[in-house]
Structure formats: structure tokens, C-alpha cells
Amino acid sequence: MKEYLELIRQRPGFRNLWLASLVSLLGDWFNTIASMMIVNRYTETDLAISWILIARTLPRFVIGPVAGVVADRVNRKLVMVVTDLLRAGIVLSFLFVDRPERVWMIYFLTTLQFVMASFFEPASSAILPGLVEGRKELMSANVLRSITWSVMLTMGAALGGVFAGIFGARAALVADSLTFILSAFLVMNISYHNIEGVKEKIAGGYSQLVEGFKYVLDQPRIAVLALIKTFGQIGSVDILIAVFAEQYFPYGKEGATSLGIMFGAAGIGAVLGPMIANRYTKGDVGALRSAIQYGYLLVPIGWVLIGWSPNLWVVSLGVMVRLMGGSINWTYSNVLIQTEVEDRILGRVFALDLGMFTLASSASIFLTGYLLDTLEYTARDMGWFFMAGSVIPVIFWWVYQLRISRTPIEEEVRS
Image (tube, rainbow, N blue to C red; front, side, top):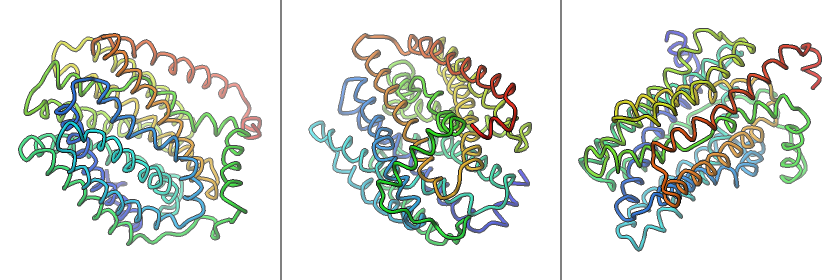
């Protein structure tokens, strides 16, 4: 913990970025609880939750490549401030969704909100190496950001569930809007340097877009790193949380308390995953890859517990274990990308990384909703189904690790 406190104290630019993430992530989980409450209130189909989650994820795939070019061509701090302020206004517009006939608005506004997030996230990830010094600080910064996301998932989900349960979804949406305004103020005060000194200018955004794809395709090692998150995105735990809260364990107003408990468990798991793994990796590339193997292994274990689910606490434990694995892989894939990829193209690689992840996530969300709603699978059935699918990435990464261990370092670098 001392290394994280030192990083916050000694790197003011990173401190502001971290604080901005802290407050906006808190608001994000208020928004998640409020949106699910509104959709559950005005609709009667599990696919309704699927569509709102798709609206939160698919824009990153559609907009991601363009957003990556913007992150590499435009001042990254400016991109983050503008998108924060736009999201503050968009979130307030959710207040107009006050009857079933207006439910379509929540899908439209959610899509707009996450179009803005699609520009913010690559810029945020790409600016980070310029706010710290060396691989050790970079790894600590990524772990701290992952821990922050996880703590805010725990606190935000718990507080959001309690807040929305007491004051209602509308008050939670207003609180979310205010967090975006505060985040924009904090980002405005970031000072950072571009690692390579001068940002390279390439003729035209289209050529930069093509260059980003070509860069990844020409280097299989980078392509694999950019797909780590995607490989682990089998099944939608968010939809199952909503279903368990509404149909199995509906504690609190409209299941808000159950939502808060399960999302809180997810946050605890996401905190524990990288914190435990970080004690053994110490920034070593080989150790990071091994940690990813364990991350993949935790995912099907979590799905087993969700499939069993005799009560809310076992479901929450399964969600926690599932998120431990996902958080390890998210954090360490970011570290490996940031250390292996040139700064001039980092935004585009992160946009591709997030884009492929969200495409897989959207497909998983739709499949989960379809199986629940159309084929009438139960939430417990889905846990077992996704457990079987999650074994595939475990095998893939194990085979990849064997290949890497037998490949001379010089050959790996050339590849």
C-alpha cells in the first residue's frame, strides 16, 4: 500500500487522473443501479436489460478505432474534459424517462453516454505513461487504477443501491451528472509530457486508422495482448446479477439491495485479484503472463458457484471469484500493452483492445438475454453453460505460454 500512496503523493498529474477516475466511477455505479431500476420498472422482459447493457458496450467497438486516432492526434487532456462535460448533460436527460412509452430514450441516451466514454477511455489509458516514470511506477499506477475501479464498484454499487433505494433512481442520476463535472475539473489540472517529446503527425486520420490495424496485425505478440480481455469475455454476469436480484433474491425496493450486494461482491473480487497477484509479479513480464493464466482459471470457478447458487451469498461469492480473474487479466493486459507499444500509436492499440472486448461483451450480453428470454434457460443454467465456455481461454493461454517458453527471446522479439 505504501508504494501506491507514494505514487499519489509524488506524481501530481497521476493524482488528478486517479481522483477523476474515483469520482466518475462512483457516479457510474449510481447510473448502473438507476438504469436497471428504470428498465425493470417499465418492461417485463430479460432482453430489456440486455439491450441497455449492449447500449453501454457496443459503442466502444463501433467508435473505438476513430477514438483511438483522436487520442493520438488531439490533446488527450482536452478529449477527456470535453467528453466528461458532455456526459454530465447526457446523464441529466435520463430524467425524462418517466413512463413506458419513453423507455426507448434510455437506450438512445445510454448509447450517447458511452460514445463519449469511447473517446475518454483510450485517451485516459494513453496519457498514463506520461504521468509516471519507469515500468515499476507504470505497473503500480495500473494496479491502483484497477483497485480504484473495484473499490468504486463495491462502494458505488452498495451506496448506489442504498441511495437509489431511499431517494429513487432520479436522485441517483443527478448525483452521477455531478461526478462528471467534478472529474472534468480534476482533469483540467493535469500537467503531463508526451513520452517522445513531439507527437508525430501523419497525413489524415484514415491513414492513421489503417496504420493502427497494420501495426497490430504485423506483430502477433501485440495482437495477442490486445485480445486478452476479449478472450475472457464469455457470458454476461451483469444480466445474471439483474435476474437474480429481480427473480430469485429480491431484497430491497425493486431488488436494489440485492443489486448492491452482488455488484459489491464483484468489486471486492476485482480488488483482491490484482492486489494478490501483484505480490508475486513485481513487474516481471513472464510473471505477468503467468498471472493471466491464473486469471483465466478463476473465471470458470466463479461460474460454477453462480450455476449452483442456493442463496444470495453463494451467488455473490461466485461473482467475486469471476471478477478476481477478470480484473487480473484487465490490469496486466494494460501493463503489457503500455510497456510493449510505442506512445505514438498507443491510443489506437488501446481503442482496438477495448473495441474487440466490447464486441465480445455485446455478443455475450445478447446471447445471455436471448437464452434467458426466448429459450427460457434459467439464470442457474447460464452459470453452468458459461463455465464450459470459459474453459476454452484457459486452454488457449496455456498453449500460448508453452509456445512462448520454447521460443528464443530474439525470435519472439522479431515476431
